[in-house]
Picture: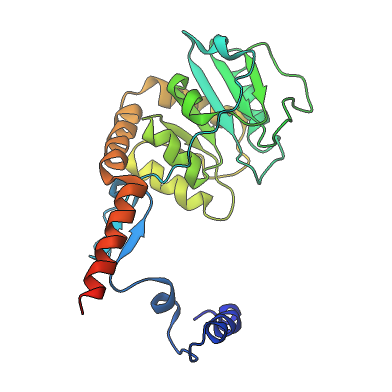
Amino acid sequence: MATPLRKPLARARAEAGLPPSKAIFDQVMFSPQLILASGAPLLDYERPDRPAHLEFIGRLAATPRKDALPDWWPDLRDRTVVHVTQGTQNLDPSDLIRPTIEALADRDVLVVVATGRRGVDELPFAVPSNVRVSGFLPYDALLSHVDAIVTNGGWGGTLAALAHGIPLVIGGGDLDKPEIAARVAWSGAGVNLKTGTPTAAAIAEAVDRVLREREFPDAAARVAAQLEAAGGAQRGAERLEELAGAASAF
């Protein structure tokens, strides 16, 4: 087990009345009976070493919020819409938002920006007339209007987009984002920019590809079908109940 985790685990076991453990990291973190994972097989490469007791259960989505829609919402109708987001942690708009706006400023598309900060409905620079900005947006309402998404590759937002069959352009710079970008690109459902600070030219080329080339939305639709078929939280709960029932029988 990784050294930084040894002491916290020992404390947790002691507080629960359990003896010390010499188990390695994988033995502590992953059940030998059942592993439930969000996502879908198409986002996991063709791995020959995938455990037989690992099951994908699709997208784990929270109950949609009842947020009020911004006053520009009717502008989404009958437009090609590109949504851009950096999530809620990497909030410097110069990383991804600004170059996306620059890339699409002269295009016949509507660029919808989420700043990632509730109530912050403006950017610290002027935007062209084809840009709409909001702090947070009701994704379940928005995504039915969106044709492509430029994102830093957060897992929740990525699955939300793919569940709607929307192709992605991902600029993942840190944490799990580069790996998520690689998985989406491998599935065929998006373009991996391979940097968290792409140029406007790179974004423009990638957006053109996912909007123009049919293979990207087709691949996203295949991922969407797998996510839907996996069953989500309901299926996860059922499998846990089945496991608990089997254990209680012994």
